[in-house]
Image (cartoon, rainbow, N blue to C red; front, side, top):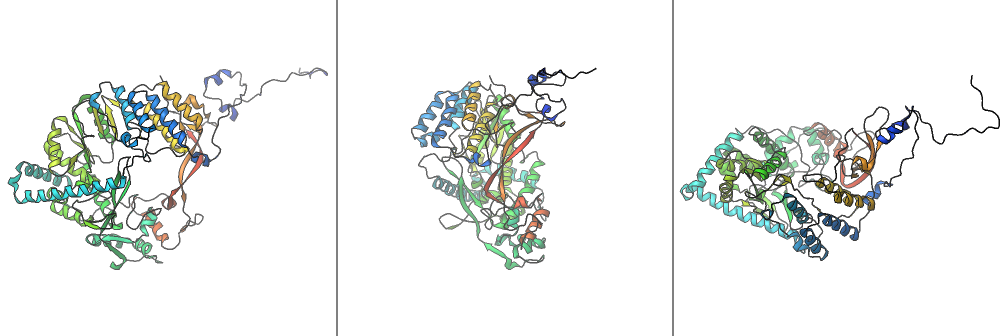
Length: 614
């Protein structure tokens, strides 16, 4: 029998809050072993979670970083490397000798210990591509001078190959190699198809779609710029899609376009874009319709190469082979300078079957508008920015190397081949106008480099590149995550790097989370974050992050009704139903320069990648 407490006797209240074992708050405690041990008969003491210093709003991740903070980050990283080369890099940076800094070189032949080379290599390369250093180098002028040099090189090679075609006895060995390469290329390409499968647009700009209006919906509504030689092919392509014609002409119904709807242009336009601290990169953006046709041809060549074992969708093949080559020395790596700009016209005509060469010549840009306003006839066949240049150069390099040796793999101008054939293949490539990049080509020693993999005796030494001085907190987060990823590769991750990263997180506070969910938060280990366990039978942990996205442009569309005004309605249909069909038309009509951050609560699955620090 239960009795009520006597009057006047005070009932002692429990000093803890009772929580049911099946309540949502109980789920928050699951996971850590300490909380499991605290459970007793379905009751436990609920501890108040420790407050973390999270960012209040999305604008805080764009908070500016001062010059003192920039220097502090760079010095911390170089101090953690703790080598004489790291000290040299810091002294050059602090003294303002940035030109000497970016020209600093390192020779792998001087090293025998992989870990020692890894640290010195990381210090040397850390600022080598940093845009914003005071080098007093005319980056644009240097890039344009390289482009003019490539044109001169192509002109000389064109004349050389013409003489070889007239008088094969001038260089019989070269003639025999070119003939063998031509037979191999003809076998790879097969007969010229009557038409190529349309693959849609690329992400880059064209002569009539640029700035913020480079998404597919804008390209379908842009002016039909085309060279005279490619006009017939472009006309057939647009005639197959009346909706495309309506988008271009801003018509009320699907229509067929007349020849006068096309704008005939001379060729492509040469510009420079940032590359590294020593030079800019030269690219040429193509006429609007030419690039669409070029991409279709490039896709076909890529598929034909894949049937021969050359996979241009996957860089990991060359990366893995470079790693293996650094262990055994059985394979060499070759990298070419200005590879895209040194494929001369005569080489394409001598290596490709005539019908293939004529077709590619029909779609390419024979003239280029240079920054000085002059329009020049090209001695090169195609440039970086052409829709089939990557596939064409891969095909040519594979054929030339395969004439000399077997077991060749290529990815653009990154070539891997048996070490014994390195000299002969290098000489053949130079004979047809290409320039070997001796600072990135390796046949001796323990170092190999290909497709972004830098390996020394089986150790991944790929460095962290600070491509620009940190200007906002988002740059600090990216640097933190890159350094942490570098620490996890190869040799033991030392505790000194963990302390450095923790120091950065304490100074520039933001959300923490696991690797693999973008750079909207600091990547940390599980025990450093102690995240909240998901409830209601969901397996995983919650964490907060920032997602970088673009603002939806509502100028031409109504987000509620889903209708687009004027010709953009037909452009939206082409975007949704054409090649590379878009899941969301709105994603294809964004202002790419107006980035915004959105705070998100993300569920990490049952795995949380971590690092065991030593």
